[in-house]
Length: 324
Image (tube, rainbow, N blue to C red; front, top):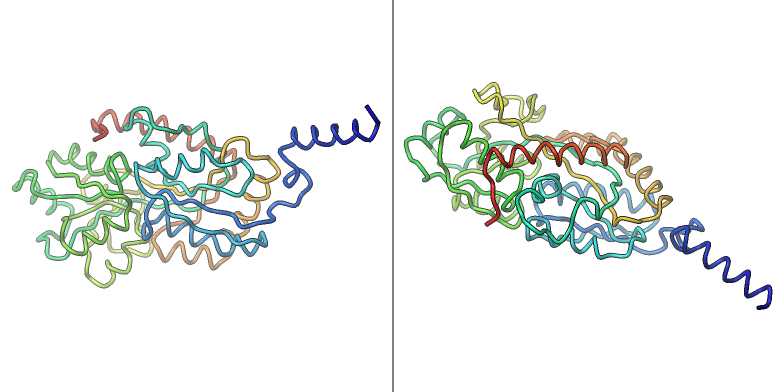
């Protein structure tokens, strides 16, 4: 075999072992990146993706396209990213409820946490308990009293079976000794629309999509499920302050890539995401929405999501959540 052919084969083998030519030689990205969102437009997962997409695209010199793939408790989006080429051009904006609760609720999911490489955490936010306009309750205590007087009558919406909203609702039922009816949707956006239309009575969710309607009076916030009050909702008590100290549920929203995505790509992505999140504009937007810009690097996110996966296994079992 001629020497030049040997050298060509050696170069090709080296490129293959290092994760592909474009990534290995530093040319990534050289085309648009798709950020697949695991829920419908209008929810916090979608908001997080859109807050990140434009500034990240500018930093990388390529357009970052937001693609909503709601359904199957995050399974449609997760399966799409799992099957994608691990080349850095298809990413997942994931909701924690789907990532660490769905595996305990849905048997034989078409994906597992190990199918993804952690990139960066973007937002964190507690759940806020909101009720429709016209429901005759103004506090969490009044909601509980109403539910006890009307067993099964109250309907609560969630972004899907096994979502954090679903589990939070079940936790409330268990801790308060009440019975409500769960109504699952394909994301927070559709659930919010039906709540505004009084098709359901209440929901649990991160503050961002609800804030305009809370401030306008179309929705009423009763409590937040974090350890502290939300700065943009200073008059809304925590669940602990309202009498339920164990009702603690915080969501997080993070970027993942298909497993085996080259490390240089992951490193560049997380570095640029960190820079975007460090800007005053990003932090201010997060605060206004009732969330916090909470960056985690790949190792931190891997460790945290693993711990969350274990923690919520016990919560789901205690709440007796099962797939429909």
